[in-house]
Length: 149
Image (cartoon, rainbow, N blue to C red):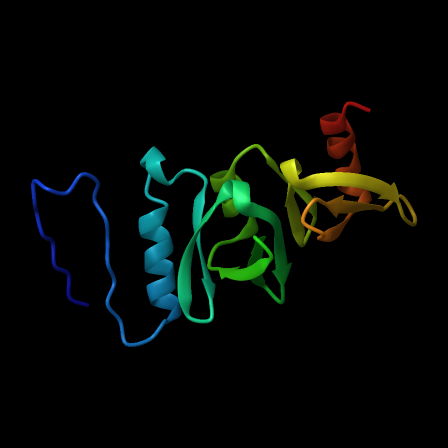
């Protein structure tokens, strides 16, 4: 892989441009790693892919994180994006507004609209963007603590 670094006094903030023939898992991982570097400017941002396009997603636009067949997806502004990170990594990056609600899902608590009982201690969470997720019994106490009940 070829790397070019251009230094210019006109640049206010460093940025990276990747030129590639096609989107590969390696390129996607590289972009994620660059975007998640330790500086605070990328806090709460992740890279999602949709139809071979890499999109920067802000935490406040993400309502749900889902794991399906060992692949991680996020729902943001009505679109579902593939993310090359594990759910626990996303929870660390996205911050305190996100809560894991099952082995395969986490939600942005700011999107929580209503909660209703379901079956065997499971509850259904309705989100403001129309998404619906089930919270398993293991995670209900943490949700109740968040809701103050």
